[in-house]
Length: 108
Image (cartoon, rainbow, N blue to C red):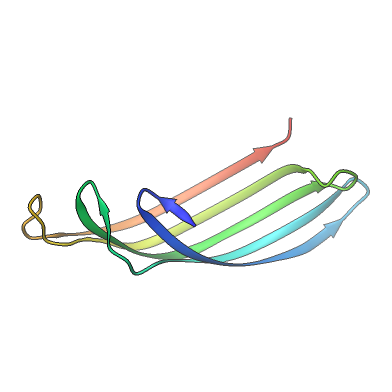
């Protein structure tokens, strides 16, 4: 998963059909996210994200067509970003980070 500029992550997800009604199917997803342990060049500086967290999804599908009617996705990651010593940062840098995302998709 590309979770941000120069950041890659592993996502392990479980999706469950939680409801069937006359018009829709509702799918609930639970995901664990962990960034990969790799230094990547970001603005010319070797940077590694050490983040982990979770994502919860609720997806409503039109029963007749299978198209997404609505999807709600909430994601939270936290941890530390490390930048190795380099010309721009002779001492390197350690940055605590919290990322929170809420997304809503609707078929209008």
